[in-house]
Amino acid sequence: MTKLISKMKKAIIIMTKVPQAGEVKTRLQPFLTARQSAEISVSFLQDAEQKAKTVSLNLIIAFSPFEKKNFLVDILQTKPILVEQEGANLGEKMFNAFQFAFEQNSDAVIMVGTDSPTFPPEFIKQAFALLETKTNTVLGKTEDGGFYLIGLRKLDKKIFENVEWSSPKTFEQTKRNIENLDLSLSEIPVWYDVDTPEDLKRLEKELAENPQLAPKTSEFLDSLKLPLNTNA
Image (cartoon, rainbow, N blue to C red; front, side, top):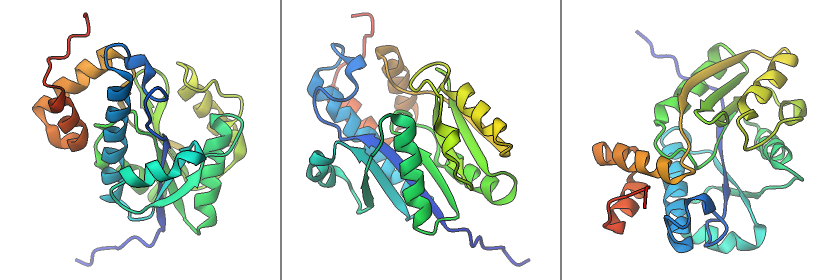
């Protein structure tokens, strides 16, 4: 039997803040220090980078702030395309990053963040397969009402308008926008973000059982040499 080879040009965007102390993962403080919060953010980014590279070598990092670009270059393990996040809010920044990716002649683009370090790379593969065969938008919902993945075959700015970002309404409002545009939508499994000490405890337990889900993050948690007590 002849195996069909996809000719769809794929791109993956990782949206990230440059992980520096006091600027990232502040909700994990004072459980973690500002420096440790930055260090775990580095691990999250590196794991996201490696995960994406197992699916597509066409990787774009959309980051802010631009003046910290050199720091970002130093912590990345590969040499992806770097593009500054531009826009007045997260929706505009996401739209502009997607627009950049499609301007590189991509047929399908998937965007992920770094807050869900253990979701399997198979979910990205599944999203691309859906975009190729069934649908023109894909969403992966987070348990707190956001989304950890969005994939598009067609870009429309209205997808990202009138959305309360970083809220329990984010997923449903984005889904509503997609449906109002008569774009077909598929969903992949729900996952969780790591934002709070309770999330971190859950992450520690998951990685203790399977460190290969997020190797860099697992190494960081091991380096703390402390049991995570979120009631402290």
